[in-house]
Image 1 (cartoon, rainbow, N blue to C red):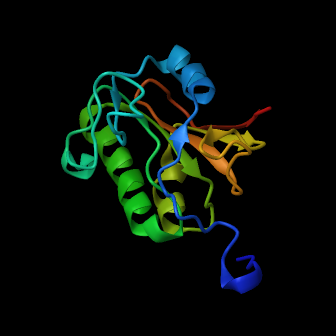
Image 2 (image 1 turned 45 degrees about the vertical axis):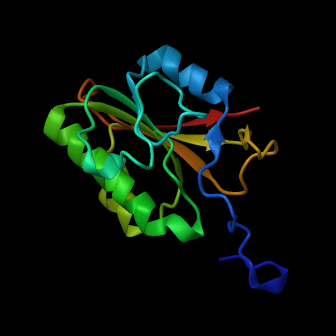
Length: 161
């Protein structure tokens, strides 16, 4: 991992729950028509139905067409892994469509165990802005899709400007 002055990683952040901008979400919502936001709060929810920290999404059933921008960053590594595992399991169990915005950590066990079994992976080229982080995050991102409506895995790159 690349280290910066003072021992901080370039991926370190005091914030691990960056809010997705409307533009990125809106493009995906036009395609998928989400029914629930799995990792949200009253102030940043993207659809009317959502799970907050209080609801603990990891203890809920993920049914329907689900959007998930889980907390990620160095300090939430296990939580991120648990969100991805839960997404994969509930897609299989309930036939849900689950669309996740994730850091593209292709060298991790959770990526290889779950994301590599997704029905589609869209690597984001560029740095989409997030609320409070106008120049985008300094890490590669991907949209990982678990969907019973797809019959093969598709991997593609989508440029963000």
